[in-house]
Every structure is written in C-alpha cells, then in structure tokens.
Length: 80
Image (cartoon, rainbow, N blue to C red; front, top):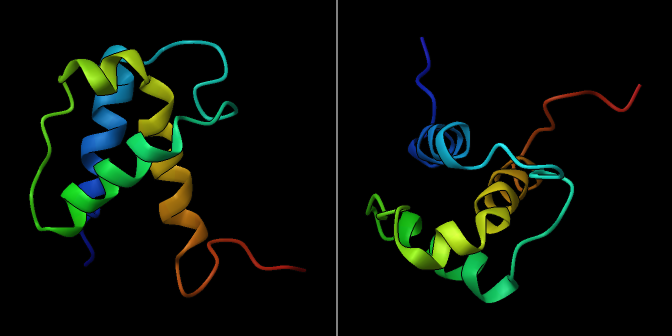
C-alpha cells in the first residue's frame, strides 16, 4: 500500500540511534536548524543527520517530525 515518507523514516531511525533523551519530542529544536533540515528534505536529498549540527541539536530532528505531522492535509486523528 503506502510507504513511510523518507523524512519520517530518516528522522525516526536517527532518533532511535542517537536521540534517546528526555523530551526529544517535547522540547523544540533551534528554528534555523529545523528549517535547514526541512530544506534539505524538500530538495529531494537525504541529509547527513550525523553532522555535528544535528547531533548537537537532536531536538531539531524531533521537531521536524512534529512539523511534518502538523502540516499533513488531513489530520491523523479526528477532532471528535
């Protein structure tokens, strides 16, 4: 049927490997890092998440996952 979008696959694999820290999805990453990461995925690239910028700001990877779900045209869960 449907495959998992590359952005979610890459980010969740990276978080499972490097990001098991308190508040990984609760705390926000640095906005400029989130936008840079988003731009790399939007450019049809698979970014190197092992760069220091992403390891030092692991929360930007979690924030990108949250942003992806927020921007879906239809919510995963209904409002009822």
